[in-house]
Image 1 (cartoon, helix red, strand yellow):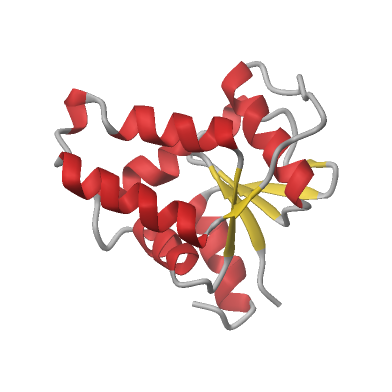
Image 2 (tube, rainbow, N blue to C red):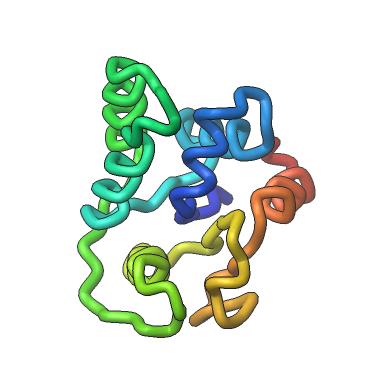
Length: 140
């Protein structure tokens, strides 16, 4: 079984800034197809905008290559349902994408913005908890 997953932007930033970290491993699993990363145009745009911020000082060519690889490996969806469950509105875009893609997990380093540990059957977990779920499934 390949899990469908939506990664919060903070997972992507951590993956790029901390090679060898749990978020980095999770992104590698998405890029290699071991898990199915689900994206929407809004999330793709947010990833791109955030990882290009000057404070992260990531090389432009690396960011462009990363975004190309991510987009090529992801399941792109166009959410049809508007969600207002999170107090942080951009996080509602993650929930919308997860709903549209019938994702199994939404992985975030910022659980406090999500109202419940599960939303419409989608488990909302930290990178460490998702990594443990993958280990339990024999996928890491």
